[in-house]
Image (cartoon, rainbow, N blue to C red; front, side, top):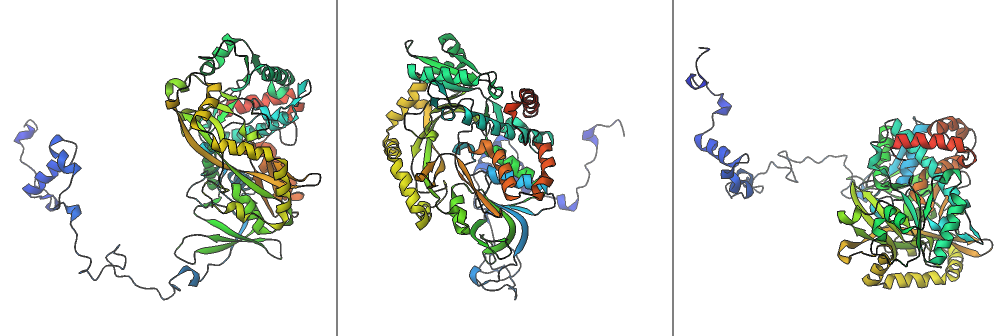
Length: 580
């Protein structure tokens, strides 16, 4: 028997459930799999296909009301009314802290709170279907790890030199972000760092004798500072060709140009980072709720906040949460929510929305010739956020180049906001400061109108200054995110237009929010630390300080004052984040 062939053995009787008819076997053999004979049936079914046949719903009285199940629907007596407004509201939920908005600020503040107080109940509410869908999204910001290595607006000319204090401040703040992200990476709370941060040299571009002279002074003022060590400078065309081949190819040999370069610069996909921070927050016990829109904020007698939240559930459509602390990190909508809170500190604030556009190149032959982020000087009188830059970017793993930004306008405070946002923010207390700020910046209005009227040819001409051999067919125009520039009251000028970020907090620290734009996401960690220090001042923050110093070694000190400490920490964070 052991020596008999397989063909000689009697066929085993098939189980009852496998006794298929010859026709059924033939159908299975001609339809399934990937063989040529069944292709037509796999690509197009006929009326006698089993999936196209069903019993009549009209004749089947046992189906549920929706037809989803074979069980008749039984109406529950305790279901309340038929509409949301007439259904009983759920009980008020008690929490310790609420973060409004699903951007990098709320994700950072929420995660820090869970690390400092693991037993606290912390909730993030986001009105859209995912984190980082607005300003934190990779397509809605510059993606620069803003460390002032290349941004001209942080180093304005000042007589025979340049002013460097703002650049040093921004770099100090960036170091806090590097340390915190490195800590999270070493603890396994962030994934492979290359998914959100990559080495990308930062360069400053000067064109024309005046700009070149300014860049020389900038280099002289910064390159010996501990935080800017390693900065290089050149006017040599051969060296510039090595650093930025795309920018030098086809350039007129008589052009007076120069570059400074820092090879420790980074490109950040803040959208990917925000989503990773959100996962770390949830893994640490935090609760993230999507499709939840905070519509009301009311302070109660005991100092806690009662939040009303709209959600499209099958119940009352709303719920209420009571929290001891509220952080409003809702981007442009932070202004509207803080106004709803009626804290006196928000009086006098108003926001002016500006949208942006970028030119995008995805041609690999072009992309491979530009490994840098290169910032140029903005036109005289132009706002800081209009500084032109040509950036190597990695968004969602895709390598590309972005050039811009070009200004646009929409009255929305968020990319997915309402056309009425700007008008909703108008109050009696902010009309005078806003009018004063507007009158002092009429030239910006003219600039914005010119940008709005700029043709494709004019935008391409701007690109041509950076990329002489650019082809129009390689560059497409995309809309970036919304920025809300802050206008606020000022004791000297009545009202001013502010281009940076501003934290507005209640006197008792129970609620605060972030307004404004640049440098934004890059300094999220510094802002989060300052928010917690301000809102939890006293014994609470003193208790947290050792843990903060464990996460961020330099906390409470200035790295500018200690070269050796900076170099040691920088080397440590570089290893953890796999950057320079």
